[in-house]
Amino acid sequence: MKHVLVTGGAGYIGSHACKALKAAGYVPVTYDNLSTGWQDAVKFGPFEQGDLTDAARLDAVFAKYEPIAVVHFAALSQVSESMQKPALYWRNNVVGSLTLIEAMLKAGCKEIVFSSTCATYGDHDNVVLDENCRQEPINPYGASKRAIEDMLLGFGESDGLRSVVFRYFNVAGADPDGEVGEFHQPETHLVPLMLDAIDGKRDALTIFGTDYETPDGTCIRDYVHVMDLVDAHVLGLNWLQDGKESRAFNLGTGNGFSVREVVNESRIVTNKDVPVVEGARRAGDCTMLVSGSVRAEAELGWRPKRSNMKQMIIDAWRWHQTGHYDQ
Ligand code: UFG
Image (tube, rainbow, N blue to C red; front, side, top):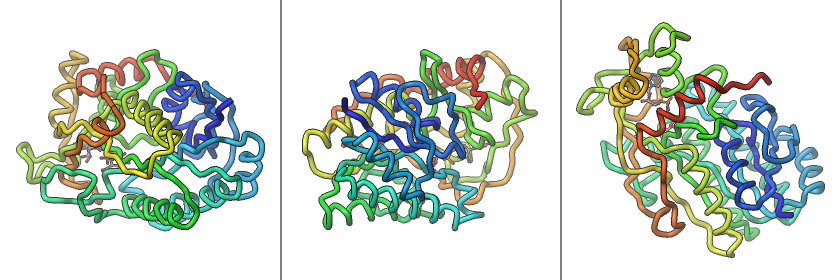
């Protein structure tokens, strides 16, 4: 059996990835401390509770399953929280990843697929971003992810670790079968907060900033469907299994949507009013993050199937109305 260790497998993206990995013939072993994930979301393989910074626990899990590779999602990932509590991000994300890499090397496991972010690029004055853009993060979250990318390349030189790095743009949507979906507590992401406002779980969605230098004054993001995103991870794992070199790929569609455009599309999909209030800018937010790359399509053969805004909101809305986790 081809075990793959999936750190953060109880989280939003990790749980969808476990489903895709299982469908591709791998056995996903979730390693998660449940700080932001849900045990109920672990449905597609074994679960091992543990922290990324716990070296002894990692050693025991590597010895038990002898995974052929690691898919590394576990991280704190909120830009605004990272502005207020940078130490948390350096310790959890960077020290945690270092501990994980050391455990991998000790166990002889030398392939890793890593979740990085477009936040590593920073603000580039409305330029669409490809993988060769300078990485100049403007918040500790992005900086922590860039540091891990550097670390992976360094251990490639010293120890032969091979990595596929995915720089995600904004992830949305849910499993169309309704087995897993997006459920954060507290919620900070645009699409679920907006759906809460639509069905009255919140009074209104606050639009963070209406004075950006964009056509309608609100931030622009490139949204990718979680099912398409996790498909790329299977392709990334296969890439490493085929013995190919370390490589970084953007995962975005190249289509930018402003906050107001996302709100309007939701109004159309749900046929309901979206109560909004206009608020101040959120610290750490970039004006525009849009992928200008086709590298994942050209080299990995990645073909996004559900990453249009309508489909992402349809799938998120379905999960929003029917799905949740209790623990
Ligand atoms: N937004 C609002 N109101 C809200 C929530 C969000 O206006 O209540 C806006 C944000 O200002 C931003 C957009 O909606 O312009 C998307 O915000 P999210 O919080 O959904 O996502 P982020 O862009 O902040 O974060 C995501 C990932 C991060 C990643 C980042 C890159 O969650 O991991 O993209 O910027 F680093």
